[in-house]
Image 1: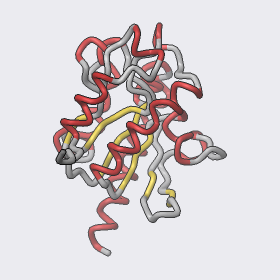
Image 2: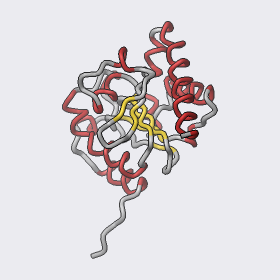
Image 3: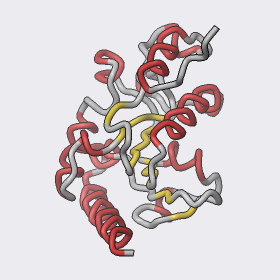
Image 4: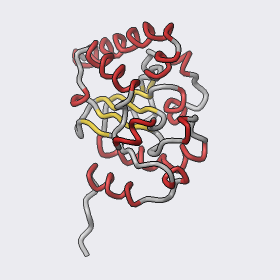
Length: 189
């Protein structure tokens, strides 16, 4: 029997069939989307209501703000890859539990392996916690970090945080400007 090459499309099909997460009983699977050869991968925490309904990441109010932030640095959704740590919406948009994050983590790891981004951008504390357990989003946002494998992690507040706390909006714009400056400096070196 021939082995099937794993692609984003086959990964999405497998996620639809997977019932390994309790959240899958009451929510739709939401795999990431975007440029399959993106140099930048944005990672949120979990799908919200609109994402669950549409089966796509970051299509609700936080997604619209993310689109605005991308545009502020000359990028579009088609230029990047966008995903979440958890692949199903937690009830009532509650925070995902550590167990839910752990059981969904292999899906994110497969996405990262397929995309091979140069820069991972965790949006918020839940996504950042996958890469650095002892680093807070408040201390790390807007600053490049290095993983042992050489991948750059550039943490940024989650766009939804600014929708709930307007004082964070400028920080997000500043962090995206810092991300643009970082990307530009890498092109020159």
